[in-house]
Image (tube, rainbow, N blue to C red; front, side):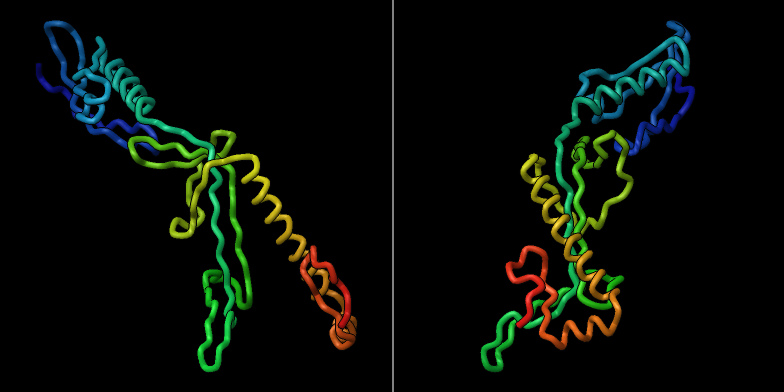
Length: 208
């Protein structure tokens, strides 16, 4: 059966592109495409065909779709990452000091935290992972692969991240309001012994 063409057929961002050879049988009037080894091994057949050139490519795409479905695993996950910028002594014993030192937030000049989390779908196809929003849209990039982690989704775990995010946002809002107030009011508050405490502190707003 003579080879009539060599085709590069793009499937999608997960599978990529296959380069295949198309054959034509004058005797049977059919075009056939031999399946790649990894597809053939999963589907248990050697080739696909049709009585037209385009039809053979359509059948090839169908075969790859079946292959992909057979190798696809999905789970609902929480993707998360935390970065910080801070430097301080955690313990001091004579000349022996223990430090916390993190410099992971490049855009910050001072102390900073960067919390990211997202509930999404993790799809594994032939050992390769990809992530999708809950609406089905593909997530094109990662937050930061060396920092990013995932865990299986539960409503309790999602609630934990939501509560943490809300607590941090309350702290940010309080600090933002304080430092954007009149400078004289800030000075009077500090000089009178005022404390700027995080939300939830029992003595929040009290003075020494």
